Length: 219
Image (cartoon, rainbow, N blue to C red):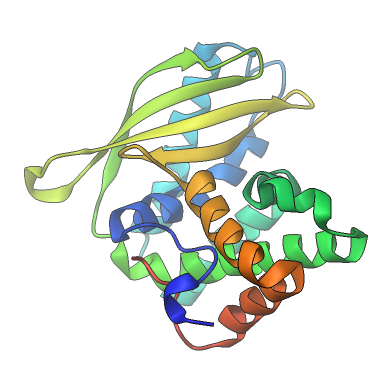
């Protein structure tokens, strides 16, 4: 399989950085009770702002890279509904998988997400962010708009966070950086591989990428 057709590629380096920040931000939803985080757009904004504040403490800390990775990995594992995100990424191919393949896909997706985070950690160079507003996307989701502020006064990056309430708690189900959706980008990669190689080929390629020493491509 040609290296240009790798699954779970994350667009460009800027998008990879937003994915890194998202990995850090997502799990901190556990800090909030369902009562404290009322299901409103204001609540979603407060949720994202608090996530960012807490995550940046990790990214800015003087800990070793391995310690930061361990912290972010723990946060990701505890709080992200990876089965839901995996199903969104798998798209129509989720229905074609059996139970064993479901479990393998979710596990590989989790491990590849951690690998992407680790490979991208060095991309962080002092960025901060601020919430710029929100809107209801539908009856389930709220889109919270943020600006990733670049050091040195460079043009900020516009990032939208799609927030959903699950069992009375907020979780983020997609991140759109400068118009590029991480879920859609990854789903396109899955479609490319599964369409030509089938589900076994998709899982084999994900496993190969996980076991290789190559970083996940940033386009």
